[in-house]
Image (cartoon, rainbow, N blue to C red; front, top):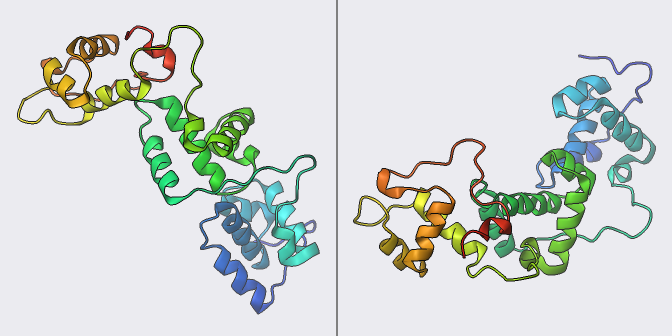
Length: 245
């Protein structure tokens, strides 16, 4: 077992504290569970570096929560309030979580919507925007923006605002539906989708289906639909609609 080292604060737990920390390791709030694991491992005499390796955080993070617990016990594990305007809470209902999860798993079609859904789902786990940004590998400003948009407008806030000028004649979701159906779903009794069968399936015109397939280089008549090549962007922004009048 690792020694705590001369600079590490010793941690001794009461039975009640240990029981509460163990309980917190099982909760859905990832950040609370992480801090509880840190303190439990510190109480076993491990060094900050050793705890960091096991938990998957930096040693300075372990040191921070070790010192906070030693000074204030369980109260020290609560996130300190930020100065200035407090961050609005983000709580999801069941329907919102289901829809966000569905969007988050659709990264190969509407990538921009998938990322925004992942941001909101991560923010709902708790912690700061900086931590969410680090987990997702994006800028904090991006998390700030879409967290605020979701709190203000809920699911509708994750869609792009209407652009000035002539709006596209078909919606982003309709284009996505055509692409997803072409790539992922069977064409019923036929061996592949035709313009007529896809038009009937989506309610769009045959000419619109043809323009969408041409815009995104989809050729269902040449054989089974295959996923897009790695790194290929099928539909990422409303600008992709410009060539699908």
